Length: 208
Image (cartoon, rainbow, N blue to C red; front, side, top):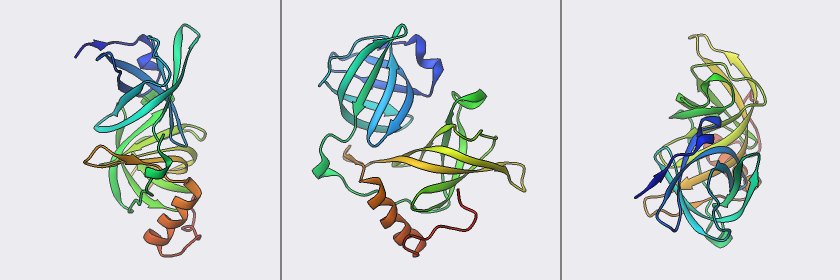
């Protein structure tokens, strides 16, 4: 399969986009919100095209909603959740290891191992090996989930690493069959908080 290198890939985490022509585009991820993934790429992709997306080891499928020329590249939006009736609510457990990528600063392209410490209705607390400035968009990649959010605070931990309080913007889940899901976020967080914390709408102390 042919692969097209994209000059904008260095501007954000790399995403591989498999398009109907058989070409694999290396794109730059710059946003993920409510099931919509936003990438920058150098080639035009026809809207309504079905594409496959790979972020690290996670794979999703979706439909291109728009592809417009902007500032010397194309801004493309991919709806990863076109079938609302197929959505299932992801449930994340605490103390889960993953790979953290921050969109901005000197750590955006390399990423680093991290740990999801706890999860609440409105956010999560993540253990990371470097400081992340508030306002930074962060992606936490785990075995079957990709969680996106905005850092609200970041404090130094006793072991020299950092703990970031993150407001969740989206949660995507992929399964072995290739199907994936994203629930209505408010409803999902309520159920996750109930299942994981056993406290309904309550949040952990000193959270976000």
